[in-house]
Amino acid sequence: MALTKTSQKFNSSINTFTIGTGEKTVTLGGENVLPFYTFDAPIENPPKIGAEISDRGMENNVPGIRDYYAGAADFTELARRASAIPGVDFIAFSLDAADPNGEDRSVEECVEECRQVAEGTDLPLVIIGCKGIEKNEALFDKIADALSGKNVLLMSAKEENYKTIAASAGLAYNQKIGAESAVDINLAKQLNVIISQMGVKPQSIAMNVGAAAAGYGFEYVVSTMERVKMAALSQNDNMLQMPIVTPVASEAWNVKESLVSEEDIPEWGPLEERGIDMEIVTASACLASGSNAVILRHPASIAAISEMIRALV
Image 1 (cartoon, rainbow, N blue to C red):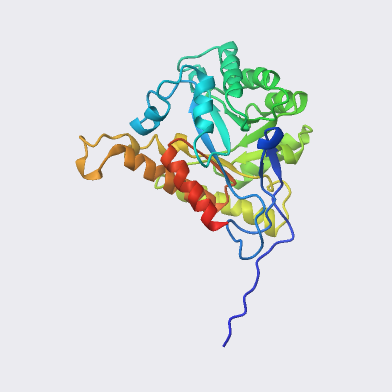
Image 2 (cartoon, helix red, strand yellow):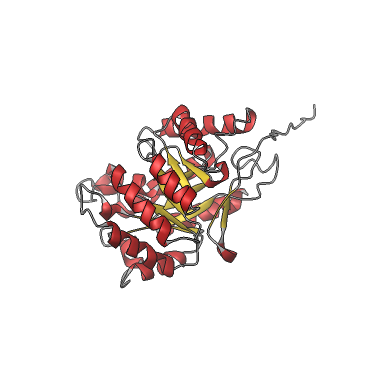
């Protein structure tokens, strides 16, 4: 008996969402099928990859990352090196040193660093805030102004600070907003609703629905992403049709498997290989579950995920 193939193409679709300017813009979303279901319908905008660099420099990373950026004199050169990694679609600059419980780098210093990064690349920019919620309000207001016209994505606006970020960065300076929630579909939807109610267009919002390294409660991330995508496509829920951007690197390189030395646990093998594997496994699972873009750190991880995306779309 012949198999009759049934297409699972939906009438609804994910919003198209564009960052950057000129010829190097990046567009996410637009699909009306499940992740990588190109046999049901073409996916016009395949998933994208961001290369993460930090305002702390790259010296504290594993040799493969540290060596790639060796000799970079400033953030402009860091951005230039990151942009040259094959497979990179955008640059993600993380303001780790701005954390009030850490170095507490000033807003003025952070703004200048962002300007340097922007000078070093023609790729779209994603700016990732620090862990200080109130500090991010001040940071994103000034950064959105300094990078006016660059069409950057500012991650992340949370329930505690979305009003300030949406009003200044999203409305006053017309930048894109990353809505960050804690691995819960209802929280993700509610944050999209209240940001939209302030006047930010849904097409200017991307979601970070939460992240975790594979094996570390990752099943909650997967189930949340899958529920978001199904609600967006099968139920036409327009408050869940924003594309998902997932910062994988910060999770994958901060778990035991990526931190414990080979001398401490020889049977685990080389530390750097473990970190690369963790980053690749986590990123591939996020993309298969519904993420439209992942942010990675190691050039080898970026190469592997880029090859996977090309093979599947």
